Length: 188
Image: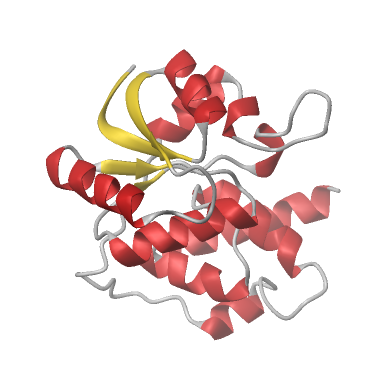
């Protein structure tokens, strides 16, 4: 699988995993304190070839994603659920621990946010509460599962609303995903 865009990862081990799974170029952020020089390189890559941000499903990974999103318009996003990034020994989490096929699948399902064109059917905060995604004891678990179903990554309550808009998730897609969550809960 050949990837045209440059993939932004956190470190050398992530680059190794990406190159093992696909043919792609990477830029490493070397942690969540992204330097101005690295941001300039990411901007240049975005201008020339496009960028896919593919960071770990943890706080530093979300922080890196947010910094890049804020500074560089139009970057694409690839996500892997936390359980697909856990080290075999259970002590560590990251893209470097993911199976090659999981990496390829995440890259096949890349999202490109389009903030210029708002979607007509908007999902409200009330919809999130009704779906028990915010304000309930099991909201975090449900948000994580929803992020996996919609392939938009794990989020907190505030991020979920923004990410649903950013990735133009329609009310129908949202409703189908929530129905799937509810069905899974009944089967447990």
